[in-house]
Length: 351
Image (cartoon, rainbow, N blue to C red; front, side, top):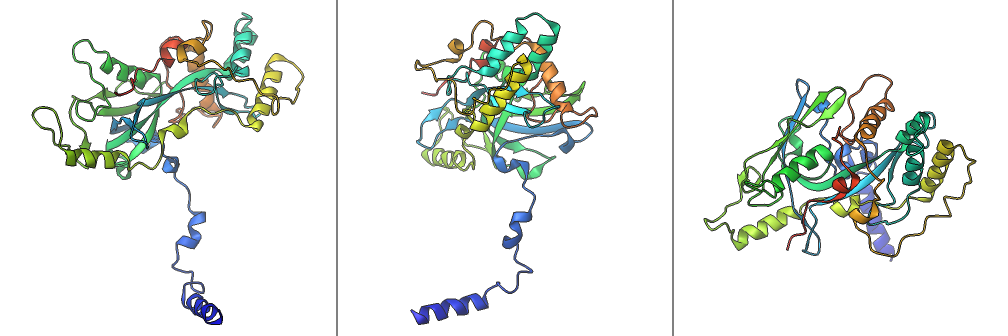
């Protein structure tokens, strides 16, 4: 026992314990964490050139850890609480009506109580807790000259209604429908972001002609009959599983006790009621029946265009009093559409 301790002592004495000058590991806690550390792809205008951010991505199928194929994208409905006068209450809240939560949502209830009052002052308050829709999918960065370190990596790409509509248009084309995430017959997305009226605008984004996915600059080899070899399949599977973040980790989640408490305060402020302080312990009861996107959102649960646009503008202002282009994870300006249409995921489960 004494010899073992002596040996460990000699090892410690000979290590870098007393010479930390060139040891980067010990100082790693001080390094600034990059936004990409959470696995999200966040193209920013300031990364671009001449007011334009451009890159080429390929949406990928959702090959899960158990080998099964899940929906290509996760659909998530989100409330943004806009309370610059109460910054501790301001932020994002996953809507409790999301399918995987299936609860009554106090923010939805409050929104429609205010919206349906027909009073201009109440409608303005309703816009403080507006709800929007986001989609999350795996995306492979095929080419990115402006941020080359992203090339060849798989991210989770959050996108809004504009990109969703472009993907849906490809899938529902009467002439040549394309499931863009298909590894052989899919298509790359030229993602082009510009500023239009203070918004991140995606109108110029478009899909390329369909073709096999390019991995590390080379298309996967496809036979004349449209099949690939077992060796190629194995390499592609290994490539898909090389990701560092799982899509399921971005599914909507129930609120924390602190969030319940903050929502109770938000509702009290908007409705002019006393704060009860009960939300952190008295949570809405989950519904027992299975829910779908089409059944969970009622006829009055329409996300209106004018509300969403105003939320975008206000969310920019929370970060700065000067005019600022919306951040990459803010909502895009969207055409009028019902929540049902937005929630109806066009991605089908693979056979």
